[in-house]
Image 1 (cartoon, rainbow over the protein chains, first blue to last red):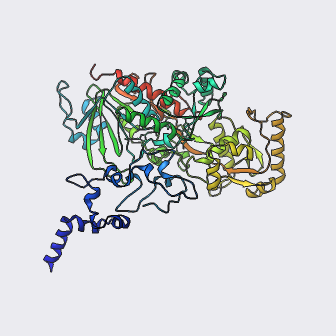
Image 2 (cartoon, rainbow over the protein chains, first blue to last red):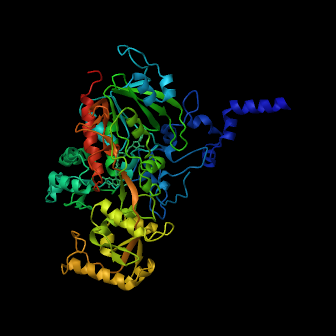
Image 3 (cartoon, each protein chain N blue to C red):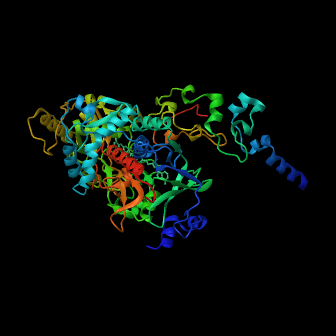
Length: 116
Length: 501
Ligand SMILES: Cc1cc2nc3c(=O)[nH]c(=O)nc-3n(C[C@H](O)[C@H](O)[C@H](O)COP(=O)(O)OP(=O)(O)OC[C@H]3O[C@@H](n4cnc5c(N)ncnc54)[C@H](O)[C@@H]3O)c2cc1C
């Protein structure tokens, strides 16, 4: 019994698929990629896990201006901000393993229902 | 001061122990993780201007460090107003102005606490900032406004009414010319040599401002010294309540990263502090929005073309176009007539004609910080004012506009827009806005040592972290220009500076 748990923990640590069970992947990525979606899809560097670079996102999604954001009643387009334009990394607002948070909401009233 | 003392003072005990310092200055003093020609700390107006001029002066391997995830600090969230006498645009619009006139305005607002030499350098080189910005692709509106305390229309407005409209084009220009930008990297200390010169920085890489966690500590060498362009610290509650207890509880306009660690590092290496108890309040602050947002922009227009009143008396209480300090002090007195929980917030309002021309109006009205009322009665009702007194104040102001009566506060009027319904109004409460204090610099943007009153070798600074240009209080649209004039100077001085020369 004890051994079983140890083995499960070991499996959890060594398998990138199972690792995802603790660090969950968002449903839209699973929907789009199925079992092709692994840790390595975004964490492309060798060795220790690092915050993914923009390239990982852009390879599939394109740049900020290629990704339309839905119009909302505050007519703010986060991908065309007056303050930052397209200089920010995707991970400034978008997270995979925790809820995403728009950086503009620190000062502005915003409402991005579709923020992923 | 002894070398050992300096190490512990500047590096902090742990960092000092992990760094292999040698005893003799002939041997290389440190083991560096990386080396650059020039490191600039901070990616706002000052930092990008320094990178621009250092690049133009021929430096190749330039690194701009930023501790936040986002670039540009206060500069990109600012309104980007820039007071630049003799710019090509001001000449084109045929507006009479001069650097001398701007200096006069600045000394008046600064109550002569200014360093007049720095003020004159800023005013006389302001036009070069305009040229630099245009060179980098920034765009301005084809009009100029006269901001409070200025005696000429010289405030340039970025086309998108944000400081981002100036900093982002420069950032992109610099990237295209090989300047490196590295965010999420906090400079924790300046590294000082035994001859007291500054040779590099100790950094925390992959730094997360929200959790204060980081992945690695490293040291970077900078062959041409360090440019400190880290801005103000108005978000640092402890530092504010220690230096100016009166302002501890005020709301603040700055970005969250406006904290005090770099000013402390500058003090630790022996920089001369100036005016640390002086902070600027923004009289256009609105208690119904976060920071200095769109309502503040609208207030500028209402102040210029209309009036502000004390809701308890229904009467005006200040020249709404005087310097920020004068206005803020007057507003605080009005607020103090209420209670701490329920301050008696002053009100400013304008006619529709004025409101519709104001940048920020649409957003402020949409977000509810600016409200519409269709009559004097409605306006009085909204803020619990005596309708007769308010009616009288509006009538008096319209008489002033017609020239039938002198303005009781001596306000200079640029645009005579009749004040009539519908009225657009907002509440006012001054917000902590700008650090007047900072470390002393000279005309070459070299940081001055408290010990010798001479420059500290290899240490350059400009912008909000430095003090002197503005004295006790700063005019609107003068920080951006101060930052970019002294940023440029810092970049040029650093390019000429060679360690151990
Ligand atoms: C809401 C608002 C509106 C304003 N409007 C105007 C205006 O219209 N016109 C005008 O002239 N002025 C305006 N100001 C003032 C002006 O914007 C600032 O004074 C100016 O931007 C300061 O520029 P800076 O380059 O000195 O610093 P910042 O632009 O603040 O940049 C400093 C950067 O350094 C970074 N940094 C700090 N410490 C470290 C560290 N230890 N390691 C690494 N990085 C660090 C910060 O994160 C920041 O990004 C406004 C200010 C605010 C807040």
